[in-house]
Length: 561
Figure 1 (cartoon, rainbow, N blue to C red):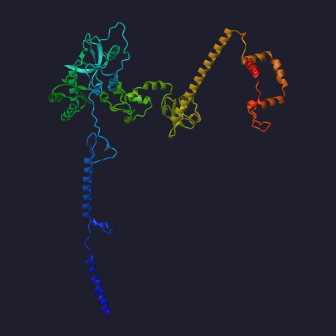
Figure 2: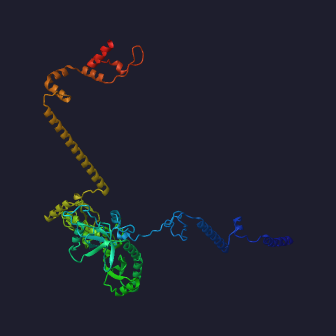
């Protein structure tokens, strides 16, 4: 027994050695696809991922080389951040190029002695003007000798015409500059220009009015176009120089003169700025005469332009020229919450549109009782919360509660008068009114307008019928009363003259005759013939009376002959 146990132990010891020899070498990652139990090492996985990435790069490179377009080769960005923001690789890449003449009032470089069209000027102009007296000749034949000329953005000025020169709106002209000459587009002429000069407090007879030299020649326009190309680069350099000089200012815009002899730099600053060193650096850098102009933040928004919260272009860049001071009182009058983020425009100041409707709200509030006036009830004291001006509603809530109650302004006046007489109503709910939503209110307004329109159409129709009746009565009066009555008039006349006779005739008819008459009026179905043939038609059932007219009698006589 002991010998057998020793032999089994030896066999068990030898078995693992044979298995170890029989096992093959560890398979690679490529051979591991057939063996599900195999787990690759970290080094093998890194090598495999590296190979896959290299293959993908080669494939993408081949695709980009093979992908051509009619507009040229296109290569999509390699590091894409957001697939929704990247351009479509199947479409050509469109590069936007800003036109330098858009800020001058035209879409392209104008041609010498060819005026710019009114449509083009109005679509590209900031603070555009409309000549509502165009085409109207002035009495006496003398034309106003001053015109308004516009330059970059919203800069305009008035110039005097030389003797014998007649210009129209849209002409590109050369005007007097400081020094040299400038190029602009005529925006107003005639009496409207006189009104604008009076509005700007400019005396047309003053010697300070600059001169207009001539219409711009082709050489003037070419030099003007070359000077415009330097504005963007000059703006960037000026901002960099001002930052290096540690000047607390913001350069907003640069405008070159038409002859490229002077440049105007517009800037905004909170405090006074000593820019003497800046002018020296700019003069040596650009080799032109430098002029610095400080503007406010509202003028800056008008020059730069943009879209407001309403979705339209800014008022200061399209039509608004006079900037009135806007205070928070205008927002309080219009019952607007004092939220600086919503009340401020792109310039950082209060919106200019807050002044547009202040007077209307102020007139409407005169009918309201004093605001912030508490009213007392037997249930408790009610405090004022807010007002809807155009609905004429005031909201109150009990002291210590948040539930609002809508009360008409007239009822609030009554309650205040009762409190003065030491009379206190029962509760606030007795004076509350139920308000409709804005959608329901708009629907009710539309239905009311529709009813008013229908009522107006009915009134117009009634007036036309009455006019027609009046005309017919006038015709009858002209013809006389001895004419033969017809239709309803004949029946009425017979009823008037033979009423008794007609009444006797109606009385003689009994109910059986009336029933028989009603049955005859009903349409009877077609009955078959006595011989069993086809049913008779309605014409066959009812005999014809051809003797009603003498013409039919003549026809019957001819047939007998």
